[in-house]
Image 1 (cartoon, rainbow, N blue to C red):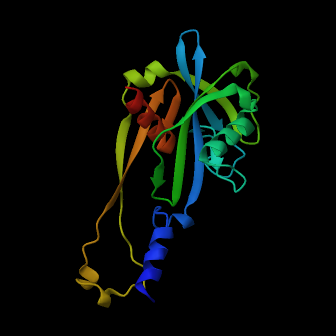
Image 2 (spheres, rainbow, N blue to C red):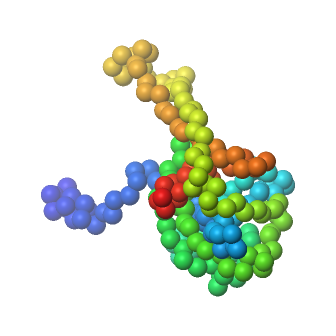
Length: 204
């Protein structure tokens, strides 16, 4: 191969996250609602009939489909489907930092305002109920953070003879922080709480 061929290939390449083509990609919306006592954040409780994480608290969102124009479009589409609202009732949608989960997911979070919350008609196949929490609660209460360690366990036929140190190789421990907010009888945790904490960091 000629040098010019190599250079032309590099020029045409757009950098991304190595291996990201095998990641599942999701988009979510952190919904803000204006009430008489100030701004509230709306949460969903996942339907108990769902196979994945039934009964857990989350934001509207889901997998990005091929027909979605972009990640923002996916977040809005999922919100419309789950809350049964018109697209015109969603405004001021802005991205916050995307997340790479250790479980093979990339999550693209957005924040937006929902007008006319009284028009919400949840999709019972996905949403058990919705509730709101005053934004002031999260501004005044730090999340509790707990640490999880992941230990490397090579498969049985791993070629230790090709690795310096062999079976005594010093694998690095992978760590993950889990965030928890406790509001009245509600437990908001996991990726939802992590996105929420990041949003609060931004607006503080």
